[in-house]
Length: 269
Image (cartoon, rainbow, N blue to C red):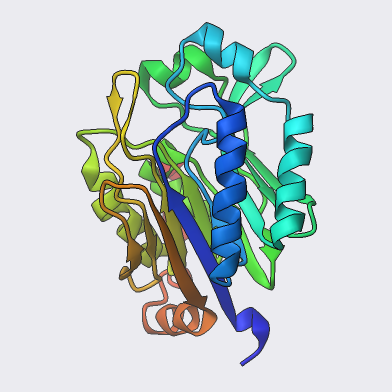
């Protein structure tokens, strides 16, 4: 079996550290070392993990980070030092606008993918962020094709289907899922994985942040809708090995993508 037939993924569920970037970077450094020790090739952490998510506007503006910043350079060094890729969420500043974003840095310290949340959730997101205007590209890492979504995005089936049609084999979804919507973590993650026959990684917070109580339940789901790793409500580092042969088997046995009839779907757009 070639090296790219398998992919070792780690996911960290933790309590938020709002508006405390130094603590967040120190945590990423520590967890990246642990994940690399497990043989992980990539570490995924929650939505806005670097900056905090549920912040007053003034705090969000103060803590927001430009895509290419000194903090980004420090995280590139973390990836190089531990020889592991990193996908992390943060509040991005772009001139006068804020975005809910995720960045992916490879083990060599190169930023290889970036995505801004396209579906804003309720008053909280809309009070802080501009919506992203496009889905991110599917990128390759260690021979695997990766796509990015953030939290509420996964509740729209078109989001994951778009990435699947672009060739994604693994979707990374940092999230900040709060009570009472546990069904998203328990059910929708499995549905998105099996209907698109790909791996789905969902990294959530636990604990609380302001008036939000996070539900944990982070997970790594296979193309057959089986949980490969699953958290409860406590901080934890999850790890799973993904196999391309499972994707191939599922896409042969249940060829959803092949059997689509897009000529009938015009009303969906």
